Every structure is written in C-alpha cells, then in structure tokens.
Length: 283
Image (cartoon, rainbow, N blue to C red):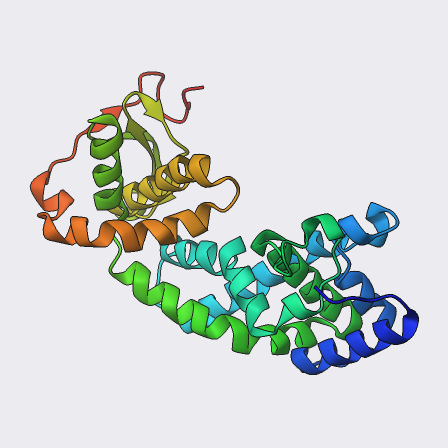
C-alpha cells in the first residue's frame, strides 16, 4: 500500500497509476476516487463503492459483447458459464494484479496486512477503475482498457469449461459430502415440440438448488449442476464462489478423471417430477 501524506505525493501516485493503466484521465479527481477504498475515505460517498457498482455492469457488458462475437456457435448457457468466471472476483483480482493495482489503491491502515491488500479489495477497486475510465472516456475507452485483460481470461475459461462436466463434479461432491446421488427435477418446459426449452433444478439429499433453463435437458442439467456447485462451494468460501469452483477443478480433477464418467456410469439419471406442477418452484 502506498504511503501518501500530501498532495504532491498523491500527484506522483496518480501519474504512476495512469502509466500502469496505459490510460490518461481527463478528470484526475475521478481517478483518485477510483483508488480510494471506504476505509480511507472521509465518507462512503467519497470512496469507490458507487464506482464499483457501475464498473461491475460495464465489465459484464464488455465481456458479454466479446463472448457473443468470439463464440458464434455457443449456446446461451455456455456463454453464461464462461462469463461467470471472467467477471468473478478472483478473475478481477488477477486482472488487477496485471496492472499493478496493489501499488496504487488507498486503504486504511487496518486493511494493510504487511503491505498486502486483500484480493476482494483489489477486485472491487478494479471494477471502480473500469467505471472511472467509462465515465472519463466513454464505453470505447473502457473497452480498449479491458480487451487485452479479458481476452486471455476468456480463452482460458473457455478451454477449461470445454472439458468441464459439472454433473460429474456435482456427483463427486455429493457422494463425498452427503453419500447421495444428485437428482434433476423438471420444473417446466415451454415452446413447440421442435424448439422446447427446459427448466430444471438439481436436488442433493433433499435440498433443491437454483434452477436453470436450457435448450435441451442435458444443457439445463449441466447449468443446474453448476448452480448447485457454486452454492455449495460458496458456503465454504464466502462471496468468492467462482474462485472456489476454480479451486475445485484443480483439486478434484485427478479423482474425477480417474473414475468412469459420471454420466456414463448413470446414463439414465432420473429426473424427479415436480410435485407442485410445472412452473411452480418448491420454496
């Protein structure tokens, strides 16, 4: 964390930050706010919290636009899974590190752990910077800033998810933790016979997880399994759900790959009928 005790030092810090970002602000006070965590601000309104709120949306827009053009043959569910990783807190912290953000963010002394700033703060500050660049230079400036940062993350996430089977991972976790096999409950189906969509939720040991829509049952079940994994792992790792999912891929990959594929072992995974009728989710 930088030591800033006067305006001259702040000017130097902001100049160095702009060099690292490869972007020059027209409104230098806006950059200062982007870098100011609530712990070091006079009030929350003088911190980067509101900018973080806006930056999250700008990041999502730029990532979705990039995914739409990069993968013209991918389904909505596939694009959503890649997006969820690229806009996650862990990825934002990674991108923040690539622009050396830890050298510039301003936090209170209580949050400076031996010169190391928590990754959640770096991620939030990164989102604040996105909003600052957007407000200062427009959407094109924000896109130009983000594109070289998100492109390798998109490619990496897409490659990982291409080999990822969320149903297999959920079955692995469910059997390990609960000695139970996941079930998939059909909640709703809509559309004509040639173009139906399906709404399915995963059920593990009687617990119903957030449902997902899919262009076919397999796609809906995969996304529903991902939702269940994120919720289960999010309970262990607080708000960093995607970070936990990435950790799971590394720690469980060897075990899962050593076993027969979960879907192959259970080709007819049962889908429970929804007891309350189509379209009505169990509370």
